[in-house]
Image 1 (cartoon, one colour):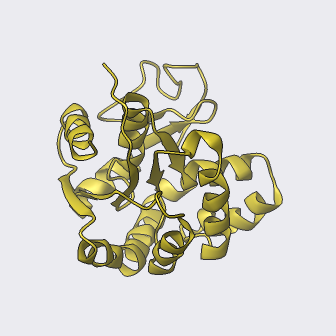
Image 2 (cartoon, one colour):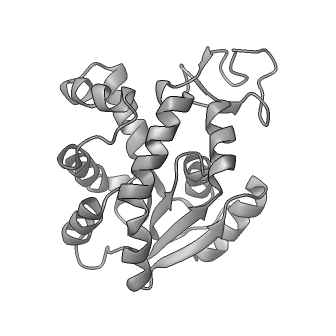
Length: 218
């Protein structure tokens, strides 16, 4: 049974920690807007927009898209009607500058209520990311070991082709983790000092994590 959550939440954690998967589930169960900067950027790339062309070179290299581009995109998304009261930010902020910009831009009465950190060892992250496959048609996420499709390379949900994202190759993952440790990990202290941060053990069954998230965000 669903619940209505009046929460404005940031999900933090390294690539592969499970933020996106859980954000979709919590959004569905809690009637929140799921705002994924990664999904928005990939949509821009697929549509070959100007923003997509600018972002593609950074994404292909496993690098972060510049702050100014991301901040503007998030501001526009949060202003939409479905995000008027409650939302989950998945993939943003990733730098201290982005976190500070978010604090400045959120209006009174709509400030952050929670920041949840998905904690997971790096060796587990590597295994998750290298085996991850994404449907090129509907965006569903699969894994060659832990969530394999019935037919290899074919999405169970829509029949689309499953592919390995360019930034899920081992060399790109290593680069992403280096950038995460350098740029994103300092946000843990930033939000901990503001008494917003909650630590979550992300190395557990997804159903267990989901129930804990729903409790944390009430």
